[in-house]
Image (cartoon, rainbow over all chains, first blue to last red; front, top):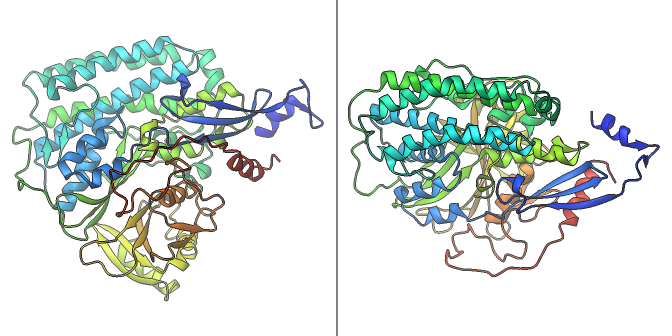
Length: 381
Length: 179
């Protein structure tokens, strides 16, 4: 594909249009780079020869900060690792710590966690859909996406008081029980939201301009994706089953009936379609959780100071909105983690960017970057 | 393949390399000689019964002043996953303080390039044979390795010089066969 595209602009090694090679700096403040990502792009005319991401503009060394905070304090920092999907990172850290300290969260807390993490996945995918469509020129879906996301944030605000960084999922349970009106409000939202997904698909999925910009663009070959550690919806768009919820179930995902959404083409459109289908699956999971939500305590009985045993090491992972989110913790017998390392999906997903954009036009970089659903704080931490 | 069978298979193949093993909350950890890590990982990736086709992450560890710790100061943990068979394992190698060197695996997994650069940047483990081992998250003028235990959390460095980055670009263009 790459050779074919290049041959269109080059005749006998000389560029047909008299183009020059030059290097362009994109970002770190370019609005389409979703935060402070910087790309150095080598272009031949408008054709991309090489894309080189420069990381670190949002590096806050959260890992070092966490080593100097107690385990419960770390949860607030995990929010800032992925602020679009903060609940997922809360959960990843809480699950790792619980295993390390042998704490069992009660059933009600587990169901609440599942409800909130899946609501978070909806919110994250909605924002992604809006931003992705905006990147390639369709501004309307952004407003549609934010409209529904707002209602999810209202549900979060009603429960924990926050709209972006929640600090809601805690070690041993959740921060606070839901209000009695949460369940009917959540059901009403799901009834309202489910037909909306079809509405977005009517707007975008088979829109000829959208298809032009996404079909066949930025194909991740399965073997390339696996070898580069691509995960989550980005890899499922290439036909590889990699959902941690299915492969190594945590919480009560093994009791849930849901499909792993897979598309086979591996292009931007497939990754888009995977996320749209995932929204429907998430709605179904939330419905099942609301059905089975049982009364009881929302937090486990725990010692006043949480300490991990000396030399205990754990790698624990969940499926966040972007892919495999992992936490590596080492305990040293004190109330602070000796080591905390966050494995974020965006870091490895960004790695394949240059291979996906090579030979395409400069405007396609934004389509590919958008379709990978990359969040810069997750890359830089 | 269960953890015990996996361990036996690797021990049989590399009798000198395996130093020990541990169960990390259901995930097998194999401790290895640092110099054999690339060979072992190549075997783990290519063997059809193991098929660890994905590198999840490389975690750099600094064990200085760790309670009760004896032995090398640094360690690197390789988290591996098999997408086809659904199992996972982690490999641990150690490196001494005076010569923190571990062979690279960047020729085996594409993302190891960045993972190794991160571990080098943050902890200071040198991955021998890496095509372009330089800082990735911290500023290029940064002195020291911030996630080492002897780096104080309050130390600040004011860094302002630009980096042209063309050295990195030249390597990549050459790799891709453009120049």
